[in-house]
Amino acid sequence: MAKLYKEIMSLHLGASFVRKYNLEPGRINVQVKGHEEDVEMKGKLIYTHVITGLSKLYESFPDLKDKNKVEVKYSKSNHLILIILPEIVQYEKPEAAQTVLDRQHAKHIHIEHYTPLLHETWMPRYETDLYMIFGSIQDLTEFKYCAGTSESLIQNLLPNYYGEQRDDGSSRAKPDAILIDRNTSQYLIAEFKIRSRDFIGNHRPDEVDVLICWEHDETNDEHLPTSVLCLKDIVAQAAREHILDISD
Image (cartoon, rainbow, N blue to C red; front, side, top):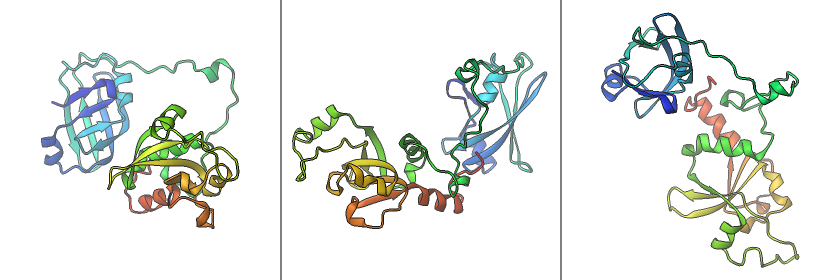
């Protein structure tokens, strides 16, 4: 019997089930067979033998509980996980709640969301987009995210950071984040910019360890930190090598 993880919209298959069918981490089709209705969705099998992304399962069958016995089968022909629910669990069609945009009668426009498949044409609008992308692919880099910065954090690390002015009389700008070097475990000062050329505006190369950008378009390396991480290049290579899932 699979273990339900309702709070995190997941289902634990168990190591023996995964080994029996030689399942590899990645996207997988999921069909839920209920007493009244069948529901289809896509999930993601991760290395801990858990399928994530099953919000549709728990929204369609809200009465599903840990005590319910759930049978799980695998179909190799269509790479499908079949979840068979007991008759006692009733189907309930999910209803869309009214959102802020609905209440404000927002215009119907398309907002292109990030997916590795569109790395050539998609462009982040704000640095926040970069934080999310870096978080999703940081395992493909030599760095891992530690914390966002605040003036108090920087002052605790570097008491004179804001008090000392640069040679030209300008003040130092607050960096964006603290990263951890995976090889040395050192804290690193990091800055996020959509384009690497934007770094020059209010930062100095010796004040930042790592620049994380979407496009590396600054040709003069003297204006940049020693380490420049171009997310677009990493996403492109990972997509070509099928390391990243491109189905979303």
